[in-house]
Length: 255
Image (tube, rainbow, N blue to C red; front, side, top):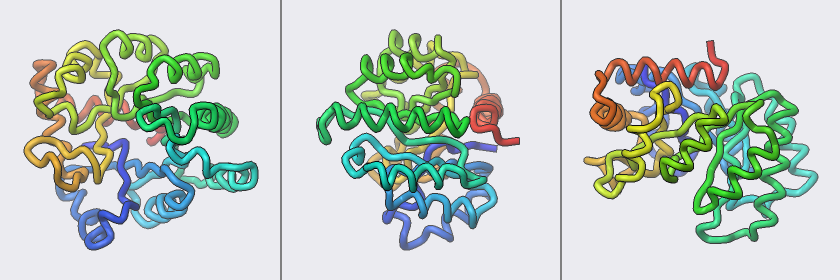
């Protein structure tokens, strides 16, 4: 069964056909989904989906671009939400310097606090890192994130940086970008990294793979990513599905 480790089915892009789409996944060999929150408003929506669907699990956390919305009061609220029985991780959290908004210090403050929360709750972290490789790695090392576990979602850095994260025992999240003609850097990373360190993800509704690039993404398109991993690593399709599913179950503690 395919395990989609990073989706946003609470997004308004699915408002017209969410239930129909989610009910169709099991028939297409999609066995598990982690729905990942990114804003305060998306936390309850994520947990509601996890409550409604047996195959959906949640991750509770605030995206770095939303870090300025956090304060001590709503952080305590967030902490309570992480105790939900189907919440499997803290995420997505991290650093995003592409827009530099909010300011970097605000992002760093709440990234550190959310890693502390993950340690407190004994949960792994889902990391968003864009144009912030050195600071992300440095903060994760300082926080001893290797002791709680992490996946670098939508991995976008070089083989050299992949080596750093892999040396700490982290997973790399691989999605539709792998199929892009301009995705050479990610292809090199997938060729280099052990299959046992890769997780499949969509980041849907974003980043649909070729031949659906530019359209709304969903877990139904993950076979295109599986095919490309199999091609790059010269292994069979079923092996990619089996090993990445085992990886995800181990990472999220799902029996």
